[in-house]
Image (cartoon, helix red, strand yellow):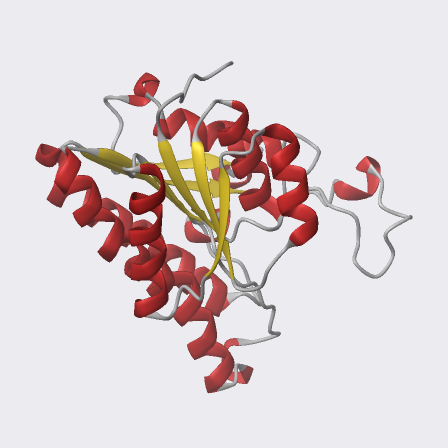
Length: 249
């Protein structure tokens, strides 16, 4: 399904890897101008982006720092003249055995990046969209935002929070032309960081996804582009599961 975002401008946080990288590529291929942000520079990803389009600009941004988030939004508007789409994807993932074993600093970091980072991004994206009469925001939650998963209480709490934030903000700005939705991916197919050569599709089927495989980054990116596009013009406040049926069990 092809999209035409010619003349549109997007901001993607956490753009260097995973869902953020796939989304940035898809936005560029659809004709959008993109501000790609991440905590650290990513020359290899930026080189990949520029094979799709030169209309991409990287800004180093810590989403827990209000000044940096505000600057990224301002630079996007200054460079491209507008902000039509925002994809708030930056996040961290940590696994702990049991809730009572979480260290406070690790819990705080999880909430700061995954939840506060989304709120801070929206805090500055929304006024930019109000100024131009509308826009679309997609917050990246997770299947862990829809169901409970043992050993992931901190991550699940942060991602449940993203959905609550999304739904509440969607109600606040529905009459202002701003649609706000969330996407909830299952586990992404990716090579093991420790054993990159032993990853296979068969090993990816861990029994949690009824469809029998892990999620592909392109599938999440396509869902995000649909939520940004006019094809979803009557959709707001929705948490779209792209999880192979995990949350339906």
